[in-house]
Length: 223
Image (cartoon, rainbow, N blue to C red):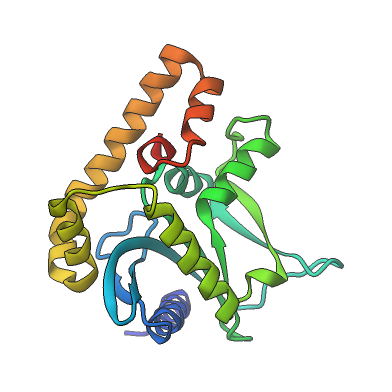
């Protein structure tokens, strides 16, 4: 049976992104369920696990992205994925890999989602897909990998997890089987956060809820 070209392109993209994070000494585990997240990455420091995790959504393209006169490329994503990344209580990054050029671009999904809402007056547009901008500085490089590491480290520095929570997070980074076992609980938690946000918006208003979510605390940022 012949494999679809889209599957081959997707595998090439995921392998390229995985290799990049492994080369930067991250621990990388694939997400076994397709929830708009492909990789669970775990930052290390001095060859030790840190308990600081993030997710990566990987997209592969069979042709190079179109570029405008300013050197900005565009890529379309499903709006539901953008909403999902926005409310995720864990940092999420989008990696777009061009198969012909072998270039990979990485963007911060939560920042991308917030800017998208701002473009439409603080509300989600009534679209199924939306075009996002990818700039030259998003091209995968040592500096971009360092920026990702710093962003993930800074995010988790605002949270003081218990000993049990640290163990659970570290285990996700080191053991793929445990990560698979914990996945249903994790995504149930995300759905619960989404439900709480909706109730909070109804109670205090969307604008005040937005101000709360912009506080640099993980639980508030998830709302």
